Length: 166
Image 1 (spheres, rainbow, N blue to C red):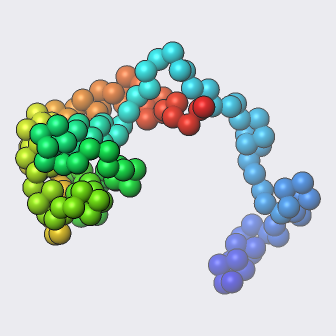
Image 2 (image 1 turned 90 degrees about the horizontal axis):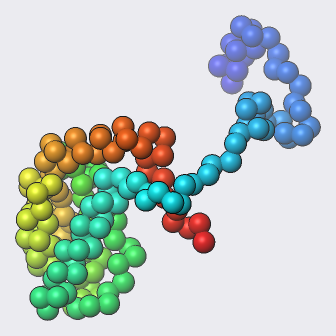
């Protein structure tokens, strides 16, 4: 309340509310912003986390092919994201925690199997199991350089996807 009073003293009263915006002000550019158009002829650029989601999917497929993991498990709840604490690495996943129960396995044991598959990637310098079965990955510097090159190449299209376009 005090901040609002200070603002009014410095800037004067607020302009009357526009009935069309119900009191919310919008910059004029919002009214004429061009629609976002996705170029579907060009392969969509993926970001680092979606690329590692693919790597984790390939590792799970490899474990299933070896018979270490049942096939057909629902992978929709698997997340691949930055770890909460940057000291733990660059990429974290809950894959083992999500799949352990439907696979009838101990989460930590499944995480150890996944870590062995993921550690073999050239992009990974360290793969560790944390707690009951979370997986943390530390990436090679070349992974970051490759990501920067993608960002530079794609510009404002970086990270766009045609997913959900129908």
